[in-house]
Image (spheres, rainbow, N blue to C red):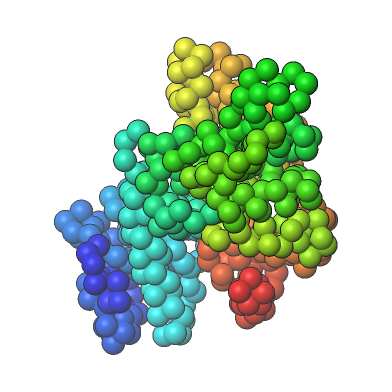
Length: 457
């Protein structure tokens, strides 16, 4: 697929019904696509082996060839090519099977021009997004030796692109997201892709110290400042000169410490405990929290002025349950990492084990996934992780868990939203099949999806 070819795609239409084939050909040519047609499944395979198409529209039954066979072969030869099944001889079971085999859409004859046009347009848009995602992934990989974040999720890739854009600046960044999503990894990514990359990256967990200890950790002290202060101690604010200071769990900082930190950020200087003259600092601040910081500001639990100082750019990392395409990628990465660390020949996950991981909601996010894989590598007695090597509660999971949202139980509408999205994903994104599986008409499904989009915006 070359640049500029998405608006009018290269289509292959396969149908043993000459009249239906002619109608589809005229329809697609009128829409501006370059169209190749054939009534033979064997000829379609020969065409696919000789050149690439953006979209294939095929009937399920093609004389002596099963359209499902053509679908599978097409996915093998050209993984990027999208297949739209257009059939008058299909069943719900065949529709579901076609989606599982990788079809983009499934349309029942007789088809309306707008339905075919929409399916083809959707397939071409999917190709465009895939190409854009690959470009982002190449950029996200970065330079050798720098921090890398593994993902193939579109939203995460756009977050990485945003991080790459703001990294060279000195603006402060607030990273939000659930525990275990990788907030510190993002902070390190920002540092290593900035002009401060050669300088120090220092991190402090604001929730791990009481106020006095945190003040000493950040500001330092001079000799004799208090009993036991036998020598000067440089605080992290000075030690991070020319680099980045990562303030994890920033919302756990006491109100009085928030005031002190605000002054440091505003004045760009720090007064060590017991000192009489402040010292200038040169540091970039990256903060993180797993709490709903905006709610805390409204409730008076976090200073609004400090929030504005830190939240120049906000990066919100989605939960792993919202980016399930990353589960196989991350699982493979952690498997190879821990197999090497343990010196074990474990090289892969059994398909059944991967299915269990895909179905799990990971309340502990990426950190929990790594722990599960590390455990699996440790227990594996052959070259792959089997379901028996996974935690028992994960193996016994038979229903989707009800995840809390911002510390509360989800509403019925939110659960409906999550369930519809799950069925839509299981149906390969096909709204017609999704509506059938949900037992509602396609218009009702369309309205619900539009409402969810409007609420998200």
